[in-house]
Structures are given as C-alpha cells and as structure tokens.
Length: 322
Image (cartoon, rainbow, N blue to C red; front, side):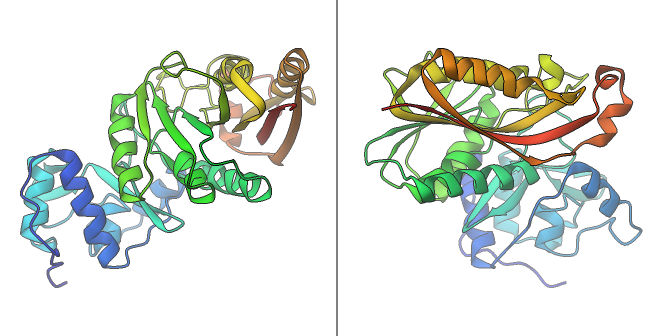
C-alpha cells in the first residue's frame, strides 16, 4: 500500500501535540472505526489474515503491528518521540486507538487494555452517549449550567452532552491522570471547552451541580483495574458510591444520569433498590430502565458471580424536584 502522507509535519515530542496531529491526520482521510468488545476484537485478530496492518484502520483501530513505511515519516516520528508508538521486532505498534463517536474521533488505549491505567472505550461508550443525547434532546440544560462527568475516561459522555447543550460549563473528573490527558485531547479536538479535575470524588468541585454524568465500571475485576472493577454489590458498588456523592449535590431540577450494569440475584436488582432509597431520602425522583437484560454472561462462570442469574445494562435518572 502507498505512503499515507500527513498534512503537515508533527515533530514535537509532546504527546498532546502528537495526538492532535494524529486526529487531524485521520479526519482529513475520513477515518472511521467503531470499537467492538474486547472479545470480538480478539476473535477478529485471531484470523490468519489479521496479523499485519494494511491501512489506517488496522493501525489505529485494530492495533495491529505495521511496517514503518506505511505511515508518513513526520507523523510517525512525532508519535515515537511522544512514546505513543512501540517497536515489536521489525514492526511498529500504536499505543493508542482512535474511535469514531458521532462527528468526533476519540483517542483511547490500544488493544489489549491490560494496563492498570488503561483508558477504555467500547460499546458501553456508545450506549452511554446515546442515553445522554436522548435525555438532553428531550430536556436540554440551560446556558451556564454546571455539568460534571465523573470518571470521564476518554471523555465520551461530556463530549456527547456538550454537542446537545453547547453552553454548559463542563468539568471532567477521573482518578486516572492518563485518562484526563486523553480526555483533554479529545475535548479540544471536538471543540468542547472543559475543566479537568483529578480525583475519585467531587471534593475538587464547588457549588451545586446541575447535571452529573456517570458511566462507572460494573464488572468485578480480579486484577482491580480502575476502569473495569465495579467493586461490591457484584460490581454495582462504584455506581452506588457515585450516586450517593452526586445526588446530594444536585441543584433544584438537577439530574444525575447513570449508565451501568447490575447483577440480578433471585430476580431482584439490588442497585435499583438502593437508588430508590437514595432518591426518596433526598426528595428526588428516579427513572430507572433495564435496557439490555443479559451481558457478560461469561462472568457467571466465576466464583464471584456464583449466585447471579444475569447481568443487566441499566440507565437511571435521579432528578431533584424544583
């Protein structure tokens, strides 16, 4: 395949500058990649013809090794200088993936996402963005409202919300500094002004909150990776902790939008019950919906899920009454 030529040189060693260069380069070539689940990704890469990259989607989507000559030298050098490309024998491999989300390209960690500070993006990100868009299309936020995306990861939630309500004040938080670095790049590339706060709670943000977004992990992860481990309640612990911190901070008419998973035990949804209690205690209204009855069925084979009959995807809106 011929050389993929960049629009302009990218010689800076700064990762942010190199990633902006990469996004601009890919946008100019109408690059599109929809990220599947890790299981699907593994199945595709197991095919005999999927061992070496042949185009941009292979390099920055499927995370395949590529020959140095396949990418424009100036862009390749910038990515290498910023430690965003690694050498695997005679080939190179990108340490980041770039995925399509609506009109935007978002940078996140390459496959496989095994590192403890990996920044995940996948099918849940797309469902989360659709949930936010549907809610805000029906009831948009006012100009100047404060929006907080807790555990923002690559920034998908806040960016999706900003496209619906472009005049809100956005804060993205995450415990993972690597996530905040990529969220900053993604927000800037999408034209979304935002403030970035590192931490695992809302203590770094003052005042009442008008809209809080959360897409926490919901699977018990033996490795304890922050982007994947949902904690207690069969993985719903992090979601419940976020709700308990955010809901008391809601302004009059403020909303907490939660997308997550919940383990069903004996036909009961423990997360729903806890959120109902929280909403009632705070004088709020809860809208709760099970949007997919059965995901990650393979987890039921593990000891941690021995009493679980299924894992459901759910959305919740907790709204403080005006």
